[in-house]
Length: 366
Image 1 (cartoon, rainbow, N blue to C red):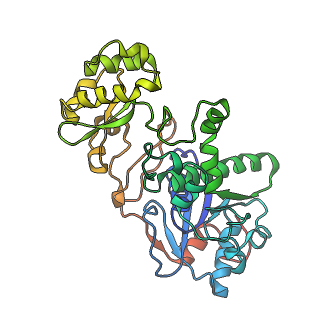
Image 2 (cartoon, one colour):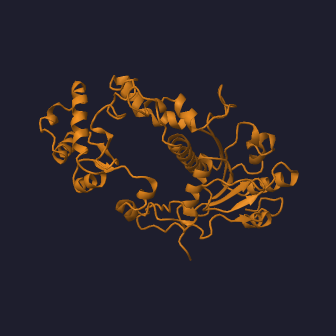
Image 3 (spheres, rainbow, N blue to C red):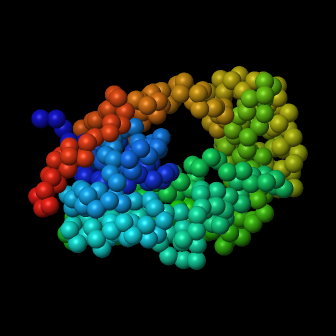
């Protein structure tokens, strides 16, 4: 008998959307859950759906709606990422589904949430992180804030927040026997991620002027610098011992270790660090920093990252079917997580999906 992976036996019905919903579905499937993605016929599938089967349903039709309800009646988790009210208009809202399956964890993933002045409005990652204050500090002083693709809002504050909420609701259900409706919003998750910054601000150790704080490029020992070949290195020598190692690596005046915390000296220190780094190429500095505590690393692009020895050793970027990163959790001797399907996501017939979950009839014989 094959060992059961961490989420083996967990059934997840995912109504395919964009961004955080598919990311959460991918993560749950990679942890062993039986995730079935529902898409409209001939819809373009998101890039994050390679590791789980897809069933095409026209949920606007009476037959498609009934088939979706049968599947929902036989699963543990339902994920939907549409604007508030869409699922209700389709007859697939929480009340419709949980009438048949009171144990269901019904997870609603939106940018603005199910209520509030902006709830019905359109938006994307950049809008959500903007109103939470997170985007404001993504840039140097006096420069326009620069978002990092859609990693912070959609995936960090959205998809990961969604998975955490789902797992918490499942743990609660194990005690109470009842499911729960989850209102998961990217603005909530992003705000939660800024907890430390708000705490620093209340203490008076964080300024609302972007690019003037230790962690937003204000400090010269926590920033990105160009090298002789046009490549860049990232420096994160926050603590005194690490800065001392950096100063030795770069050949800086040892006196800097005693005055590095003085913001009045930061422009001069920044010039010294920048001048030192221009003496070698990015990879030469990376090699020189290896084995030290200087906290200096090369800034790699996505193609280069796949070849980094540490990521390769961790198995973090082993190519998987569909060209996606083949991440696997380290389970410490536990049962392995099943590999992704070699052919990527397959479109399954509706009848096969219904039979697979024991939902071929109107009953809920799960």
